[in-house]
Length: 182
Image (tube, rainbow, N blue to C red):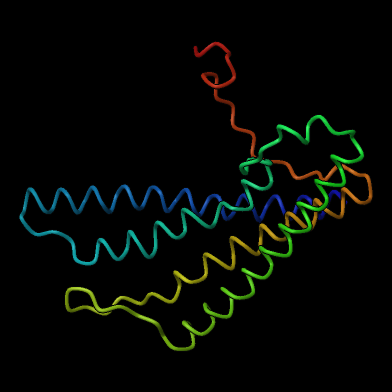
Protein backbone atom coordinates (compact mmCIF):
# COMPACT_ATOMS: atom_id res chain seq x y z
CA UNK A 1 0.00 0.00 0.00
CA UNK A 2 2.82 2.38 0.83
CA UNK A 3 4.49 2.24 -2.63
CA UNK A 4 1.23 3.22 -4.34
CA UNK A 5 0.74 6.14 -1.94
CA UNK A 6 4.34 7.22 -2.53
CA UNK A 7 3.88 7.28 -6.31
CA UNK A 8 0.65 9.25 -5.99
CA UNK A 9 2.29 11.71 -3.57
CA UNK A 10 5.24 12.09 -5.96
CA UNK A 11 2.87 12.88 -8.87
CA UNK A 12 1.03 15.41 -6.73
CA UNK A 13 4.32 17.06 -5.80
CA UNK A 14 5.23 17.24 -9.48
CA UNK A 15 2.00 18.91 -10.59
CA UNK A 16 2.10 21.29 -7.62
CA UNK A 17 5.69 22.20 -8.47
CA UNK A 18 4.70 22.93 -12.06
CA UNK A 19 1.87 25.15 -10.79
CA UNK A 20 4.32 26.97 -8.52
CA UNK A 21 6.71 27.51 -11.42
CA UNK A 22 3.80 28.91 -13.43
CA UNK A 23 3.12 31.42 -10.64
CA UNK A 24 6.74 32.58 -10.81
CA UNK A 25 6.61 32.78 -14.61
CA UNK A 26 3.38 34.76 -14.41
CA UNK A 27 4.94 37.27 -12.03
CA UNK A 28 8.07 37.59 -14.16
CA UNK A 29 6.12 37.90 -17.43
CA UNK A 30 3.67 40.52 -16.16
CA UNK A 31 6.46 42.48 -14.42
CA UNK A 32 8.52 42.48 -17.59
CA UNK A 33 5.48 43.56 -19.62
CA UNK A 34 4.79 46.46 -17.24
CA UNK A 35 8.45 47.51 -17.28
CA UNK A 36 8.61 47.34 -21.07
CA UNK A 37 5.33 49.28 -21.36
CA UNK A 38 6.32 52.15 -19.07
CA UNK A 39 10.08 52.34 -19.59
CA UNK A 40 10.37 51.63 -23.31
CA UNK A 41 6.73 52.23 -24.36
CA UNK A 42 6.78 48.80 -26.06
CA UNK A 43 4.69 46.21 -24.23
CA UNK A 44 5.28 42.51 -24.78
CA UNK A 45 3.01 40.88 -27.33
CA UNK A 46 0.44 38.30 -26.21
CA UNK A 47 0.81 38.85 -22.45
CA UNK A 48 -2.94 38.58 -21.87
CA UNK A 49 -3.09 35.34 -23.87
CA UNK A 50 -0.20 33.78 -21.94
CA UNK A 51 -1.65 34.86 -18.58
CA UNK A 52 -5.20 33.68 -19.28
CA UNK A 53 -4.48 30.55 -21.32
CA UNK A 54 -1.20 29.21 -19.94
CA UNK A 55 -0.48 30.53 -16.46
CA UNK A 56 -3.93 30.85 -14.88
CA UNK A 57 -5.25 27.53 -16.20
CA UNK A 58 -2.21 25.67 -14.87
CA UNK A 59 -2.28 27.50 -11.54
CA UNK A 60 -5.98 26.73 -11.06
CA UNK A 61 -6.18 23.09 -12.15
CA UNK A 62 -2.83 21.36 -11.60
CA UNK A 63 -2.95 21.57 -7.76
CA UNK A 64 -6.45 20.05 -7.46
CA UNK A 65 -5.04 16.73 -6.26
CA UNK A 66 -2.86 18.46 -3.66
CA UNK A 67 -5.96 20.08 -2.19
CA UNK A 68 -7.75 16.70 -2.14
CA UNK A 69 -4.67 15.04 -0.63
CA UNK A 70 -4.79 17.45 2.32
CA UNK A 71 -8.61 17.29 2.66
CA UNK A 72 -8.65 21.04 2.11
CA UNK A 73 -11.69 21.32 -0.14
CA UNK A 74 -14.65 23.21 1.27
CA UNK A 75 -16.68 21.08 3.65
CA UNK A 76 -19.64 21.89 5.86
CA UNK A 77 -19.71 19.57 8.85
CA UNK A 78 -22.25 21.18 11.16
CA UNK A 79 -24.55 18.19 11.26
CA UNK A 80 -22.28 15.33 10.18
CA UNK A 81 -19.81 15.76 13.05
CA UNK A 82 -22.63 14.93 15.48
CA UNK A 83 -23.33 11.56 13.77
CA UNK A 84 -21.84 8.27 15.01
CA UNK A 85 -18.43 7.34 13.58
CA UNK A 86 -19.84 4.60 11.33
CA UNK A 87 -22.26 6.99 9.67
CA UNK A 88 -19.52 9.57 9.26
CA UNK A 89 -17.31 6.94 7.58
CA UNK A 90 -20.18 5.90 5.31
CA UNK A 91 -20.84 9.50 4.29
CA UNK A 92 -17.12 10.05 3.72
CA UNK A 93 -17.13 6.99 1.45
CA UNK A 94 -20.12 8.30 -0.50
CA UNK A 95 -18.42 11.69 -0.88
CA UNK A 96 -15.19 10.03 -2.08
CA UNK A 97 -17.12 7.85 -4.53
CA UNK A 98 -18.95 10.85 -5.97
CA UNK A 99 -15.72 12.83 -6.13
CA UNK A 100 -14.02 9.96 -7.94
CA UNK A 101 -16.85 9.55 -10.48
CA UNK A 102 -17.22 13.26 -11.23
CA UNK A 103 -13.51 14.03 -11.49
CA UNK A 104 -12.84 10.92 -13.59
CA UNK A 105 -15.61 11.86 -16.03
CA UNK A 106 -14.35 15.45 -16.22
CA UNK A 107 -10.78 14.18 -16.75
CA UNK A 108 -11.88 11.89 -19.58
CA UNK A 109 -13.96 14.58 -21.28
CA UNK A 110 -11.28 17.25 -21.02
CA UNK A 111 -8.70 14.68 -22.12
CA UNK A 112 -10.73 14.10 -25.30
CA UNK A 113 -10.82 17.85 -25.85
CA UNK A 114 -7.07 18.16 -25.26
CA UNK A 115 -6.42 15.38 -27.78
CA UNK A 116 -8.66 17.08 -30.33
CA UNK A 117 -6.86 20.39 -29.84
CA UNK A 118 -3.49 18.66 -30.18
CA UNK A 119 -4.49 16.85 -33.36
CA UNK A 120 -5.96 20.06 -34.75
CA UNK A 121 -2.84 22.04 -33.86
CA UNK A 122 -4.83 24.61 -31.91
CA UNK A 123 -3.35 28.09 -31.92
CA UNK A 124 -4.30 31.73 -31.45
CA UNK A 125 -3.31 34.77 -33.46
CA UNK A 126 -2.06 37.58 -31.24
CA UNK A 127 -0.43 40.80 -32.47
CA UNK A 128 0.15 39.25 -35.86
CA UNK A 129 1.89 36.20 -34.43
CA UNK A 130 0.80 32.59 -34.09
CA UNK A 131 0.81 31.24 -30.52
CA UNK A 132 0.32 27.49 -30.12
CA UNK A 133 -2.37 26.94 -27.46
CA UNK A 134 -3.04 23.19 -27.49
CA UNK A 135 -0.72 22.51 -24.48
CA UNK A 136 -2.99 24.64 -22.28
CA UNK A 137 -5.71 22.01 -22.64
CA UNK A 138 -3.57 19.39 -20.85
CA UNK A 139 -3.84 21.02 -17.41
CA UNK A 140 -7.48 20.03 -16.91
CA UNK A 141 -7.20 16.29 -17.59
CA UNK A 142 -3.98 16.19 -15.54
CA UNK A 143 -5.49 18.03 -12.57
CA UNK A 144 -8.85 16.26 -12.58
CA UNK A 145 -7.31 12.87 -13.42
CA UNK A 146 -4.89 13.03 -10.53
CA UNK A 147 -7.66 14.22 -8.22
CA UNK A 148 -9.73 11.20 -9.31
CA UNK A 149 -6.79 8.93 -8.52
CA UNK A 150 -6.45 10.48 -5.06
CA UNK A 151 -10.18 10.16 -4.32
CA UNK A 152 -10.21 6.57 -5.62
CA UNK A 153 -7.18 5.65 -3.53
CA UNK A 154 -8.69 7.20 -0.41
CA UNK A 155 -11.94 5.30 -1.04
CA UNK A 156 -10.10 1.99 -1.44
CA UNK A 157 -8.19 2.60 1.80
CA UNK A 158 -11.37 3.63 3.62
CA UNK A 159 -13.14 0.44 2.54
CA UNK A 160 -10.13 -1.65 3.56
CA UNK A 161 -9.84 0.17 6.89
CA UNK A 162 -6.28 1.30 6.27
CA UNK A 163 -4.67 4.75 6.28
CA UNK A 164 -4.24 6.18 2.79
CA UNK A 165 -0.62 7.16 3.40
CA UNK A 166 -0.68 10.17 1.10
CA UNK A 167 1.95 12.43 2.54
CA UNK A 168 1.76 16.10 1.68
CA UNK A 169 4.96 18.08 1.37
CA UNK A 170 6.00 19.23 4.80
CA UNK A 171 6.83 22.93 4.82
CA UNK A 172 7.85 24.35 8.14
CA UNK A 173 6.62 27.90 8.58
CA UNK A 174 7.32 29.25 12.07
CA UNK A 175 4.80 32.05 11.57
CA UNK A 176 1.96 29.60 10.91
CA UNK A 177 2.90 27.02 13.50
CA UNK A 178 3.24 29.54 16.31
CA UNK A 179 6.92 28.72 16.74
CA UNK A 180 9.80 31.09 17.22
CA UNK A 181 10.57 32.97 13.98
CA UNK A 182 14.29 33.35 14.72
